[in-house]
Length: 147
Length: 342
Image 1 (tube, chains in turn brown, cyan):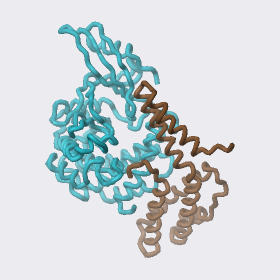
Image 2 (cartoon, one colour):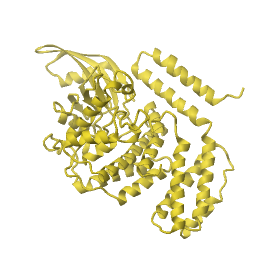
Image 3 (tube, helix red, strand yellow):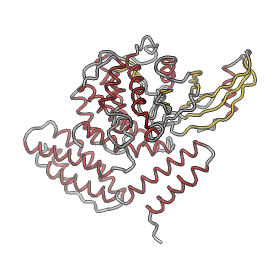
Image 4 (tube, one colour):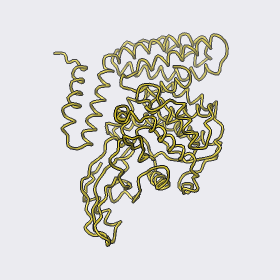
């Protein structure tokens, strides 16, 4: 049997919420158990998409950096160019997340520089950065959140 | 975290009631959801010189690490300042800053019992039928907090003073410092928001007032007729621009109905109108927009600190992991929405 984490987590979360929590005499324990179940429910939602969304986002950020490198000043341009050439060879989530952290840190630096610049090429870049940031929240969105 | 027992609490209270005998504590139970303090309810009985006494009380104790690092004496003072006023709050009884009696500083207050606090409960009957009445009370009370004179309610000696033109900077510096120290991953959206906020500061407030600091649906006790019986969670109270509280109360992350009703109750415009009427203040649109966006930074500071405390094992309460994970992306979306980029 290859365990399907979504089924395991989903089932355990349901049992915690519907079977265990109502039977606990302590309101604190019942409430904490419900919170753990709800958190496991979010893990179910995230599990299947996590590697895909990280790989997709890393590729999108590298494409942005390839667009930005010819426009950026010296040191920043070199770093962006190097990052744009990167690849996600290791598909473990921890590796994808580490690459994502490096790329998102560079994105902050790039946007801080770009928003002080003028000209149509940088304006197009700025627009692309905001579009990517908006998309990044779609990738991370959980169904049980209010907004 | 050490175990809090009924006997330990009774032993402490006996020292605070030298004229009492037979001091007894029972029915001790922890309340879930206290992310910034551990919160317990219990029953106290004792014999006073005037006769037997029974009280239902709340104990709020500092945890090892929390969502929000604050001074409990300020929280205690804020409750006391408004007790008996148009702002309903529980009665504060004892503040203990010495960790010796119960391992961490704590305070004890009267319990306001029999009312609802869940944000989700008000979306369904019988509470949902009274959403407009509840909104009227919610933002009227916030207006009362905003119109209060900090000197008259005794808070200028407790809370750090701030010049009107520094209200925004002090708060933004504070929360940016927390994000700098605690972020586990880069936060490009909130960093962009911080840069915008610094480049477009709001006008100084007409008056520096009392800011509750966490005024939102979920932090007050309400009934099925739309009345509010207690404003809770003053742990982030400070002096500042009253628009700060209004902005926090309007944040999209508190739209529990997954629609545009603020706090799950009424439209943004209706909430602002109630607040202006009650406070006697004007919510300048540009300034309020600044404070609304600032509150996304503040929210992210809270969730980021929570995530760090949980991830590093400083505090493994499930509420920290749950709230951080659930709210981080929503807060980013709220910030993008306010910047016109969603």
